[in-house]
Length: 163
Image 1 (tube, rainbow, N blue to C red):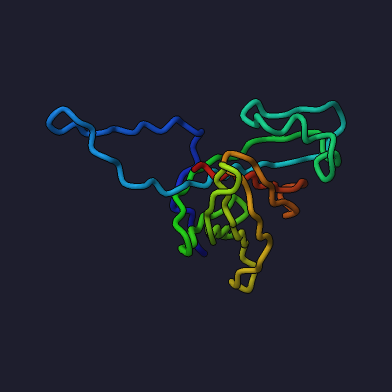
Image 2: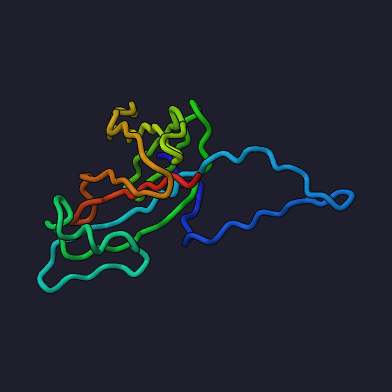
């Protein structure tokens, strides 16, 4: 059995240091984008709506499918991973499955950075990755992958590409 080798933490702002040589700032190398992954546990229970305060984008989505089916949303973890074109990054989920995210392409469209991404999750008992989603998303705009059963509810993954 594989163990989870990384820890989930709350998102913290990144700090970038720029070195100064001879009074002028050195040009930084182009920064690779990162993908922020939030793991959300959605449940249907008796009672009213309850949304973890760490889920800043979710309240307006709870009126749409498939989110309308649930009334309790808990943030189980959030992690940011650097992605480079053509090089998949893998993260272990709370249900023991491996999530793999691949940046296929990045381009500029109407002055906005767009990212073509592939998201896969391994199939239990087979170890093989199954293709779940291929999407082109704008930077800092969330997209969701969902539908895996987990502890009486469903897991949703919120992914946001951070340019």
